[in-house]
Image (tube, rainbow, N blue to C red; front, side):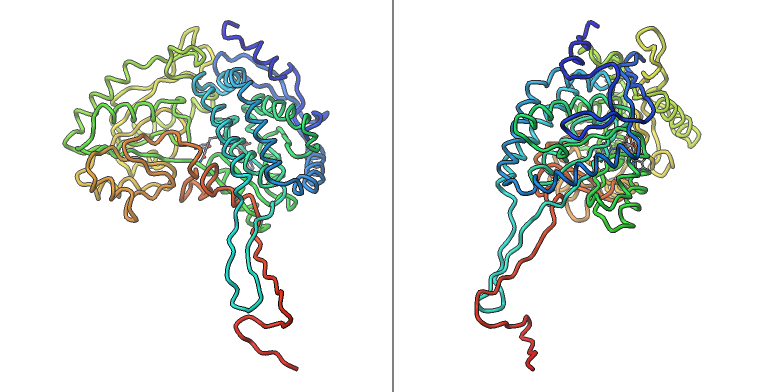
Length: 512
Ligand code: NAD
């Protein structure tokens, strides 16, 4: 325990056996099967969770419905003040929570801390937002009439999250939803349940101090079956789901069939265009971190490099040589750059993608493989690999959630953009160039078709202040900053007649 994990778990209120559902005041006596959270770092069981059943789920939804009745009536700035305190409590718990995220998910400790910092930042953002839930006023076409619009809380928000951001994605949704007057039901990934339990314990301290009713923050742990309950449940008007495109299509169809609202944050297939007018050192750094950070398990991971033919060989050699410097190992050890994949299934997907790219004619630049030895005994540590490939290979069109990078050559910028956009996903994109014509073209209507498009920054990661999300098979949702809050509210247009007549709109006459 040289990383102090025991202490972290105890600070966060994680026991060896944990309940899988909470409505806030208490953890329920859940009645489902027991699952273990196994760390990909060393294959040790961190703790167990008894997952929720359908009847546990119904208890949670009923508590949420009841809580909404009072929470929606609290003034938004007062709700903001409570979210401010959640941010403070997260500041106090940044180190233990960052450590748990790192150990349970396998990302580096620095990235674990970074994730908690994002939670703190979105709380700050939400506090300001709580005084800025603006609607417009319009001039009525009728005399002595006033017209305006207002935003009301939408109600219960279901949050389905993925394993790779065990805590930040929930806070992006919940901090905004709470100031908007909504109540949240979080179904975290069953691969990282303890991080969710820790978050609920942190929020709970603050909510108790402020007499927030039971049911405003709910957690319900289970696999896709709990996700299905949420997506089919008419009592849940908004489902925000982060994960694979496969999952998003199912959730989107289920929520769509009942004409509910979805916010989908799905897979990416992110590329960087490396122009001949690039600052080579910057481009190498951006590509390297983007491709191997979090062991290639970010939705914004760089998966393709589209490189100008005149610098292709040079860039390839320099990048390959940078790969030889990478240290792979325990992510809690700050000397390592690359940690493990989440589990054995992920390792199998990685290996099968390598087989496929080779079968399709890809040429190896940096060889992959699974690492063996005591330090790698979980069997989840793999070597980041690079292949020369064609954009139309079926494996290149597909998001493999692992550190495999494809190199593709281009001749002119229009061709580069066409290659760039020719994938089903549309999350994050970048161009590395000092040429203003190229960068402006890339950002123009005829440029990148992604939700995020950067110049001289890689694809990986984003600031909370902007709206985050992507197009096409990435699902179209936006969360976090800008005006993403609007999805958590229902808009109402109001017209008030303060005159003594009842004029109809469009001058229609209806006299008897
Ligand atoms: P996943 O799709 O396997 O699981 C995500 C969540 O969906 C889990 O909580 C899971 O239990 C739930 N789920 C699965 N099937 C469901 C169903 N039929 N109905 C309801 N819920 C269901 O994804 P994962 O492996 O945990 O995460 C990796 C994926 O997430 C990658 O594709 C990655 O790109 C994506 N991701 C996207 C973003 C984004 O913001 N765009 C962020 C993080 C991760």
